[in-house]
Length: 323
Length: 290
Image (cartoon, rainbow over all chains, first blue to last red; front, side):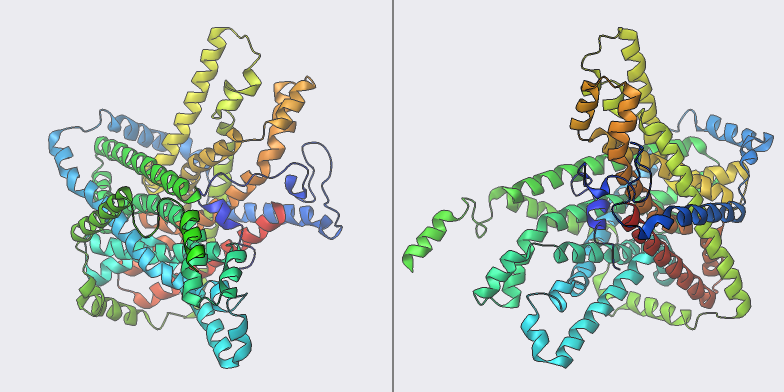
């Protein structure tokens, strides 16, 4: 999709968000009044209607959505709602810390981690090759393919087709939420952690593949050209020119995705795909809110732990690769 | 020839790539162990997947999905549910922005008590304690909002106010509010200090510094993060339907539970269309605004 190139920098925790330099045209939304009281037109008159159109559309969407979503803020303050929320909150205390309950949780906690790990492995195994195919600088564009593309037309078409196909597959994989994948895999292969792994593997393959291809597309072409000038083969160029440049970002994004996978695999249990989510759903449906409290606390510790671990690994890798 | 070779050897970094160091080997071993551990623990079966039983099951299921149910009646309904999902994600994101914006400035350490703005301050200790307390309060609120998964929020809210898209939208907004609050907070804590210093030198008050020194710097990033979260939210809005919060998710749950596979495919196509549309909208808005 055009215009999504910037999303690599935005999406992952690949360093801090890009800071806009003061004084550039990016400082304020184009055509809008900056807090300094000036109108930032960035020299084009073409976009002067944009704020108006944008506001009108935004308002219309807002009103339409408001009606469609059946928003009734008063519901929150009604006696029944208030009573339910009170029941919920008071039911949470004291949290259930009995050994009976806690001893049930060891296995699901480990299972959640295992699902996230195996799912991420599978996602890399599927996403990386497809991501390579979906990289325009590897399949049909730029210096690596110049000669080949000029040489034979059918071959050029084949390359382009494989690129488009890879992109379509990736977008199909990632547009369908992992939850829906899990639902279908549970139906197809039965309950347990296995469908959870498949769901994470497939949907994260789509995301990883897309981001990998963006990273690979944006490497510095200099080393690649230098390698080609020495007569290196395509594989050599990929291995020694492309990968060393892309690897830190690839690894860092993969780790970030793993963090997300931990969170996702905790949820997947709701549809019967193993892990701590299954217990969470049971407690929720039985109105055992004190157990819900314990489970959410465990989830918090787990996610925070994984975040910290992955941040450390990421720093170690990024640091080492940069020296 | 030999000369260049020795030169290359001398230029090469001390830790050669060809001889992995002990720490690299250990990392690799640990990695492998993790892989085996999770392979066994998840009852993963590669053989089953590559041409075995599981592959056959998946294939059968996939075959059953076709053809999609394209009757006019169902298409119209799907369109309505799709719009409902869109509405949930849209309003949820707006609610999230409201929540995040109302808490983010309290949860940034450089605006509350630390750093440049407070260097010169000789405030009474209790003011400082109050500020720190406010900071901790805002920060932990955001943490709670963020840590509780949106599906749990949805369950709580469905329990409190009943089925329908409204609790879904609230759940999405509450959870995303926590996420955006954290992302926004990082942006605010990492602002460029020169403009602030310059403003401070002119004698600007703290509120003026916020408006003229900090907001112009952070707004583009705020917009970008919001749009990115919107893309995530449209997917999560689908998930929320599962617990009874309306939209496509609810219908998907019904279709899967009742083995209405043809309808399921239609709904999946609807998800594909709406998610792609939102991705596209968000990307083009980002290009325009940021």
